[in-house]
Length: 112
Image 1: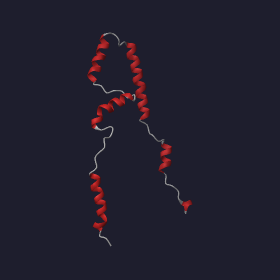
Image 2: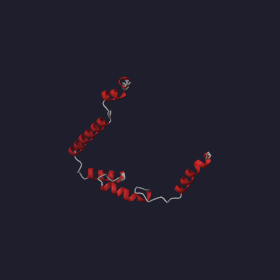
Image 3: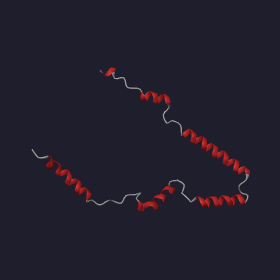
Image 4: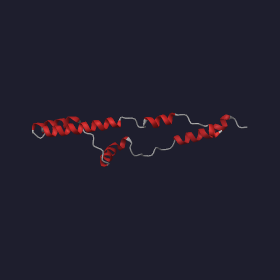
């Protein structure tokens, strides 16, 4: 009967040989970061931009008279609608009645 060490030797050899393999180039690695951001924008995600230029542009639009009380009211309405939508999304994923039904133990008496 082989000893325990002899039975584990093939596993140790395979694990050691696996460590010698080269690592393939995978998409989404650090070297691919610029491409990944461009791909996100191409898929319809908004680009991340610094906040300071956006605030400067908003101040310039306000000074130029392009931000009026009507546009401010419209924006406040949109913000309220988004806030309400976010509140609805924070609710429970599973309805309370369904959750109670899932938590009940299974009756196995018919199986015996």
